[in-house]
Image (cartoon, rainbow, N blue to C red; front, top):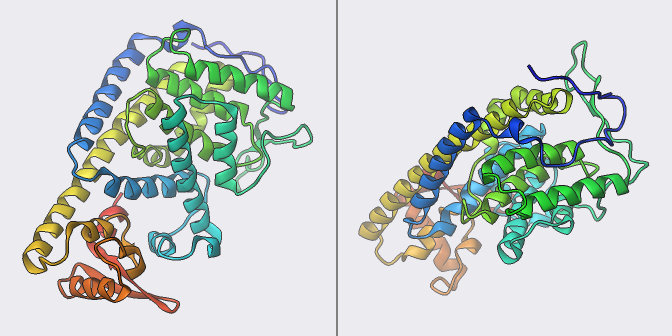
Length: 372
């Protein structure tokens, strides 16, 4: 049984232990068995993705689902219909929950491009992700920001303090720099990347370096770690789905690392999340690809003048405007409208009016993505 360590949830946890945790807490037979399963599922996902003719067509769609799910964990809800409609318009005019979700997706892509280029984590990358998510210009929270994590809900324990993260820029920066070395240095810290992911995810959430958006920033960092360690080539692992379905366990196990230093159950939870969502994502991508191939075959037979590129465009997200269809093959709005109208006649697209603009819904793709 884990021994409880001195900890006062009402005081800033400036004594949060630096990484790494003791080996006997994070390298056990049970954990290593789970690591094998999670790595196998990830490898199958990565291998399947390589077979797709146009991976970028599917990545945007999966990334959007991840963005929606990750914001739902923070109790920022938006309907699929509202979200996909928002994607066809001017992002600068968006408000509310749809804007929150799109900012998450943009932050994910910014982080992906940065880690692909530099292959290293640093504080600036973390700040950029946070700033994009929250649409702010500040960085590490200052001393006067007395951040306290309180229990959600309206029950008898609602509003009570669960955790008080470290306070003071110097303390926070020291712990972030330790985390960054842990992430980047695979010689000094030669753990399996998925164990490292679970440990690092807890540590980032415990440091809680920003005023807000720490949960979403932390989940993006977990995806980027898989990119950095070559476990994935693009960020399409739908990790937040598992966390939503097991949200109480997620928060409870995070808290148990803090109060009991119970690393084992937390790491097992994260490994299970990676394994199950790898399988989920593989199945989802397979479904999208099958739908695309059937749609392509139908259009190739019925409307052979419509080339592959516009068909791929209607699979990047369920709602498509004529303007989104423009390319080197389709140079005029009128041609784009004609193609979408012809696809409507085949039952592939459904027109919907948003304001003054008519957009077209890929109904089968929408239904597929709306399935949990």
